[in-house]
Amino acid sequence: MFEKLTSGRLPSLNALRAFEVMGRTGQATAAAEELNVTHSAVSRQVKSLEAALGVRLFTGPKHRLELTPAGRELLASLTEGFDRITAAVAQVRAGEGELRLAVNASLSVKWLIPRLPRFTAEHAEVRLQLEELAPHASSHRGAHAVLRIVPTGRLSDPLATFLIQNHTGPVLTPALAQRFADPLAAPRLAAQTHPIGWTLWAEIAGVELPPATERPFPHLHFALDAALAGLGAAVLPWPLVAEDVLAGRLVAPFGFRRMESAFALLQAPGADSRALRRFRDWLVAESASTPKPTPAP
Image 1 (cartoon, rainbow, N blue to C red):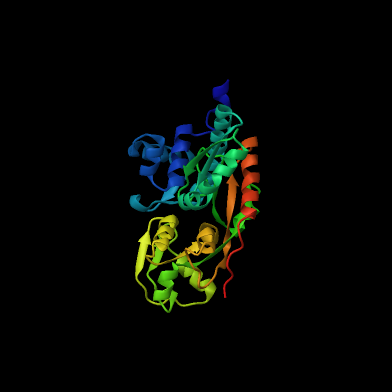
Image 2 (cartoon, rainbow, N blue to C red):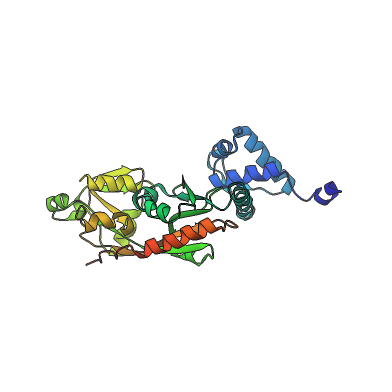
């Protein structure tokens, strides 16, 4: 009976999952690692799905595959569906007290973790587990929510909770600022996870960046630590540097400019729980206590 209900309607679940992971990660190798299978197994499953559906899901050479319009449409629905399944299973398995949060590394190290003792003191019943969120990802399989900087347009999503408006600006040590008549001529520290940070700030500030030595770092928090060590100037979000600026460890000669982005909590579909609600309320209150950024001159 059940075979008649499903026969000819749904492709293989393994094939759907292989495509979803490959489409989300952008690589068959990364999909194989996540699924704990071989690269060729992922490719076979995706090809079998294309054959079952009668459409191409990827296009382009093997080393630079891109989703077709049909692939993008299918991926969005599958990702949401698998996220809901994962969240539901995790909820049942862990109960109301466990909360899995994915967060960008720099936001975790420089903003969230230093504040977590206050949350654990107030909500000892919540078992918070942090996982690293990929630099450009807005979801993380198995996480109840993600914490990251998002474009302001994303805040219209009912699953998004606004926390802090993003402002950025160049910062450097007072000693380094004294060495350079023009702070923008100091060595320029840049995060590889946000390589256009300096360009975006310069456009908004209406300034032209002079030639300067460039020093790349993997993440924003690496660039921040390098700035604190006096290695150069870095364009960074105000919430990450507020304490250092207010304490005088860093100076912001150009102040901070409002960006079209914000710190936000993105809840996974179907992941609502008492633990998540308590953490979200705490985050909102904690964010409200963040000092106002130094204004641009």
